[in-house]
Image 1 (tube, one colour):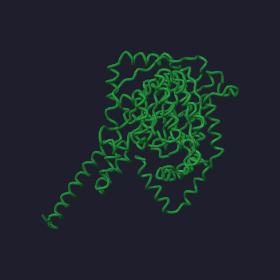
Image 2 (cartoon, helix red, strand yellow):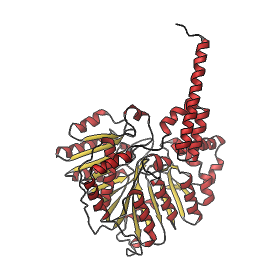
Image 3 (cartoon, one colour):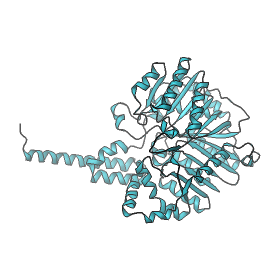
Image 4 (cartoon, one colour):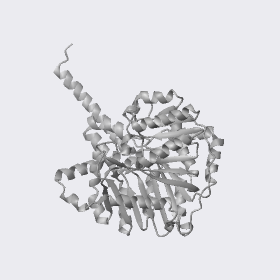
Length: 498
């Protein structure tokens, strides 16, 4: 059967009309549900004018609300009310009493997450993979009951196989082990690696935003958290995944600069709660873990765990970071591999600089995602006008996610997985651990050089990073070629999904 040209043209015309109508329907959906006005405008215009290309992209990248996660947790809480009350009760019993000047940030933390700042925590700062991986492996070796390990990326390479051997060794001792990876971040992890773990009784699961074949095409809603819990007593969290590149073995990226922390005390249970929530979404299984808090009153850190994600009913991550930026009085230092801030965060940074805060931002000089790297240049002129100082880290690739802000009598420092971009603030599941210190109520601890606090160690670490970073002349952007500026501005149009 031969189809005539006229018939083909008629079929194509009908299909074209249907595609454009579908584009209009999706544009209406974007106007109704895309959170930012800029994102809604960008999507709706592209869906109407270029539906053939934009419709599949919108289906992959356009969703910004994660459905079902909160509802699943509510069902789990109802099924395990006694356990949940016991767990929360143990944490709330160690809630810190903050001074009046910091009461609002404590209230905000508890309102956003239902968890407070807690007392009697110990936080150890870990710089780079050379310090982090030995502590992670030591925590695994110390476990006698269970291990919870969550990593966005897990590679089948030298360090990945060291972790595999360590986990298998503990499994042979009868320790229960639960491994959770991300469906996109660890997509290259071979089945043989996972099967080797499963053969020794290690329970392995993948966090996916949707079920079935659709999960292969949904790149939003990644679980970017990196958490290790041993027996509910020791926790580790921060920027490092598990792979050789985090030890500087990637020849393209060179030395890898990252930051992690080890924690003990109530915040371990807060991190454990985050892991269990993700595990329940992935498996519908509530694990048996210890909720006994290993409290040592000699531990002097007041800390808070901020676990955020696209299932939050309000923009938890954005609101908490805005509170930190707006609270800064003397200093606001941020290290992030990516700088694609929303309008509200960018304006808050500008306001901080205008009111005299020392605002410094460290970004990598060497990119791992060129489009995101390119986008950061489009902010140069705005940063220059307000006095924000931008640094580019020189020795290799910088992947750490750290914030330090303070005033005359307080300081707050955070380490975790949140990048300074829309994806971390809105689209990914993230976690940060914050420590807070105030001089008027803790014997001027910020000045105690003999026994430095975690915040003092963060300060020293960032000062060392500034020494090997180049202060950028933001006016240099004006000297860039027209093509470069155009590419930077075009990449900025994609900011909502970068």
